Length: 376
Image (cartoon, rainbow, N blue to C red; front, side):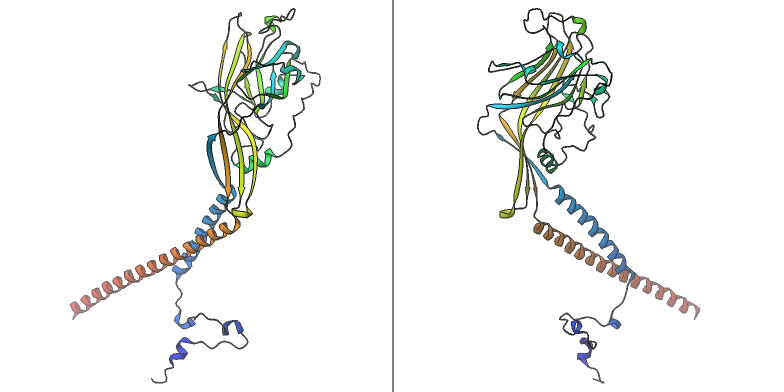
């Protein structure tokens, strides 16, 4: 009709030498049939921003993984358990008596297995991160959340597992540099029976009948700084409730009691899924603590008493992270969803713009027509 070529409407002759365009299987509109709009550019910017936010969120979620906490009855029977201790007491080492007594009736002279170093009280109370131990209305210890400044936290299981695999070492006792040794640092690890027990630090000649070992009451001062108190393998990076806490004695005859409920804990990190998955695991213990301190009568025994009980349950904290393939599929789904949503948004916005513009044109034409008729 009138020289109209239907094929020329759909086909576009490829440029010479452009082989990619020549074999393009998808039809393209000619430039004269394309209308550029400002709304398309705005929706493109919005789509890019939304895609970046969602991708960043998905990347952070994938990197952190998903944590699950599972309680179960502990399988098997454990016969031994390790306790790790690092305490500074404001008394001289020769004036202290350290013992452990458990429900099995075994009594362990812990002082012979732990290391004792003379030190200065001021070198520990001014240390970075040390905070006073408080109590809530129920007597539970307030551990001062957020005090740790050394980058060791329990925010993510993969950090716990990675730091737990490092070699454990006890820190050196600071040199006195001429200061008076008025305190004693007691630290090290002990292998105990895995039963209820009592670890205590008392004054020489008090609590146990020892001839000629009575200490003057004026020398009593059971103020203490706990740098480490944990059960199981020694992982310095794990933050326990009593780590780096200080408690001050208000009198010579003062008794500190810590009641701890120890729960065996397994931290594991799962990477990937299926045959390509890998798992890293560390075994340790957590505990909840209730603290009670008060001044006692001279007929009672002052000191530090750590009473612990082993719970018959096990806590499994597991972190899982999707494989790279799964993460890639999620990214494609996010981009596809954003693209479709923005396309519908652009289509609806252009349709609304067209409808509103059409009504405005009709109203304008009606007003002009009425004015011309009035003039006639």
